Image (cartoon, rainbow over all chains, first blue to last red; front, side):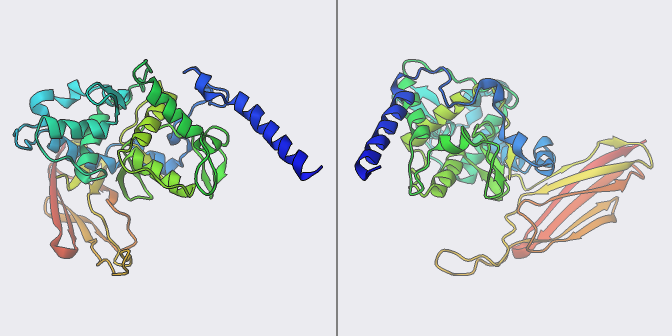
Length: 270
Length: 106
């Protein structure tokens, strides 16, 4: 086979692949390579017994240290408006129930979806007239964990409508796009090879149901974006900045992909 | 800010073995890590944890740099009488945290 016909065959194969993966025409129904709904498993099920035990009980879950901080921050007045979160939202236990299960959510003023962290910071700058909290700061993680804890046990509730569809499609496109020096796409590990081992560790299905979560490797609580940056660096791709639209779109797709699964915040992962 | 959390049963029968779980918020910086510019990050760890039951020491731990951040220490003691169980974490740079809990023994 000459080099030329070989190249032509590659092109033909690529054309077939394009037909199979015509993402523009894939509806929000499960795509060809997506994990069937009944086969989805939380990262929890890939963990060892000891790590599960840490998450199972609040008394042993170090994420609860952040949750307690978040509860204190929820009730603390801040900013020029001298208002606490609780002054508008009341008791988080009642009024924040189920909120985190719906994020990232569309924000009409900005015309795009916001992550829960961005929503908290929007509230801080617009309502409390306070400085935005830096991404991955203890305060922002604490508040996010406290709000998300109120949804623990509830199913992820993401529905895609005409406003969020373009961002959802962009997120899905990112998930399927090969990138980085290793030329890998998220889907290759998390749809095609979940359950297999990578560097001795099981590859999970990438369902972001427990964020912000306590990662033993980090020795700390961290956000989904921190985890996504880990993956991108591992693929030798340049990670997006915290709060970048690409990240929020990808989060929207990932949360939709985990729709119906139970929120575990604050989860523990190895 | 939350600095430590202790969990134990509020009441127990006399002679019952009760489990106590403690979590302390601490970075447990080993003293072996360096910054990106090569400077050593000084050690900052919890050195000792003690638990006293009505002022009698029932449990003590010495901690070293290999212990993970936010150390979880779980142990058991025998419920002898109603009273106060006190916990103290002491460490580098003047770190000192105390927590107390009460237990009712019938």
